[in-house]
Amino acid sequence: MTKQVPVLITWDVDPSPSTPYAARARSLDVAMGLCQELGIRTTFFVTANAEHADPLALERMQVLGHQIGCHGLTHMDEEEYDGMPEPMQRAYIEQATRRLEDLSGSPIRLFRSPRVKISACTMKLLVGYGYIADSSVCSQRVDVISSNLINTGWLISPRLPYRPSDDNAFKRGNLPIWEVPISAMVIPFISAFLGVFGLALSKRLFRWLYAESKRTGKPIVYLGHPIEFTSRWLEPFTLKQLSPAYIRTHGLIIRKQLYRMDGETWLDATRQLFAYMASFPSVAFMPMGEYVTLELTD
Image 1 (cartoon, rainbow, N blue to C red):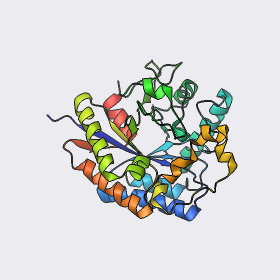
Image 2: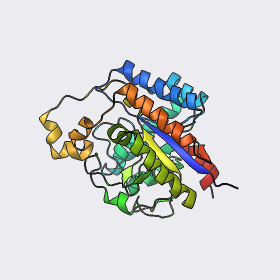
Image 3: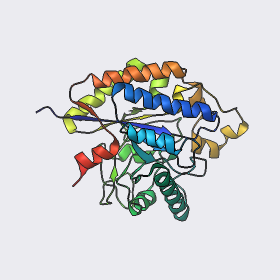
Image 4: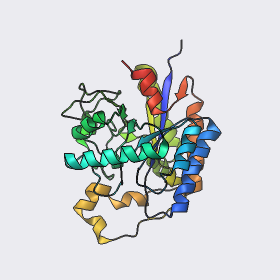
């Protein structure tokens, strides 16, 4: 029997305040339409207090077979889960979870932190609120310009899904929650890489990850942003963007100048990349919660 290769397409639905609401809503529809066109069920990590977190959009996600995860409460500068005080983390996670459950009418059990920053404190709180999986770790990713700069925790974190330690989110332990890492081989398997380096290199990275999955069973986890399918609305440059505090939160502003694609080009490249993935034997696209339930449940 041929070993299945799980492919988990995940979307981070950020507030993107510099982009008009109509454009954000349209980009979300485009992402869902692309998945419907290709017959792919995915996971949408939604920021709870964003305007586009509305019942109709969340209902459509679920009708199309997607799963909804939590992408924090505000996604603003203060929501940094690698450094927020524990009471603040608890309040934000509780509010975000309850709001998304009220809007969607379904339990929320999957989490990805804003700017993929996480801590052991966060993991323990997620357990308390009934989460079964987090996907905020990008194992062996080396990135000097993103909001994580060089994350030493990523360098040591396991490549396969793991139960984190109660004192280190990047080490194996016994917490009753799964960490399902975003795929990387030094370079991350994310839409920003596609937007900067193009389709050919993204396909090559997928081939490497596919070979690894065939050997180890590791799921391939891709991170995309629907907002990339619309016109670019760049944040105006200010001196604040050169401050250490801004760089720690958002990374070097130059990274936003590296994107080579407009919305239509990015959409077409994503369509071609997803179709390319689907052409490989034994690839099985599935939402993250389904993967955890079917493949990781003890």
